[in-house]
Length: 262
Image 1 (cartoon, rainbow, N blue to C red):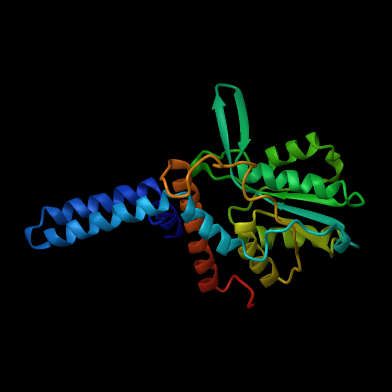
Image 2: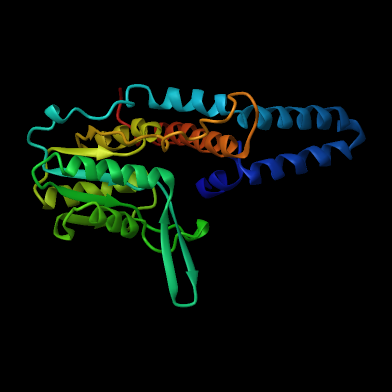
C-alpha cells in the first residue's frame, strides 16, 4: 500500500497528474457529473501551477527545515566517535558490462558534509546508509557510491562502514543501532538534508538513539538562483513533489508510532 502511495498519490508527480486527469475525463463523460469534472480539472491545474512555482517548494522546505538549517558547531562535538550519513538517492546506469552509480544532488551534499566533519574530528567511524530500490533504477546499494566519494575526500576506507540493506529512514534507524553498538559508538552526528532532518531525528530517537543533527546544504549553490519565485518551471515542480513526499512521510511515520514524542 505504501508503495502505491509513493508512486501515485504524491502531488507534483507525473503519475498523480495522469491519475487526476483520468478521473477528470471520466467525470466529463458522465453527463450528471460533468460540472464536477470541470471543477476537478480546474483544481488539478491550479495545484500543479502553484507547485511549479519556486516559492512553493521554498515555503515547504522552510517549514520542514525549521531548526535544522545551521551547520553543526564543531565545539559541540567533544566525545563524538561516529558520523552517520543517510542516503539521499542515487541511480545505477548500466550498459553491457559497464556500470556507473550516480548520487543525487542531496546525496552528494550529505557526503560532502560528512567529509568536512571527519576532518574536524579525531578519526571517527563514518557509516554511510542506503540500500537498493530497483523500482527507480537503483540496483547497486546507495552506500557504495557514497563510500567512493568519502574516499575521494581523503577518508581512509578502513574508517568507513556500509549499511546497505535499508530502504527507508525507519529501517536505517533499526540497522544502524546495532552497528553503532558493535563499534562502541555512543556519541555520533547524523548528516542528512535539512528538510529530512526532523523525521530522521524523530525516528532515531524513537529507537533509543541520541543523534546530534548535522544538516548538509539543502541545495547546491545558486540552485535556481536565476529563476523567478512566481514563474512555473519543471525543477521547482520536482522540488515541490519531494517536499510534499516528506510531509506525507512525516504524517505516516507519526501514525505508525515511528517518531519520538516532542
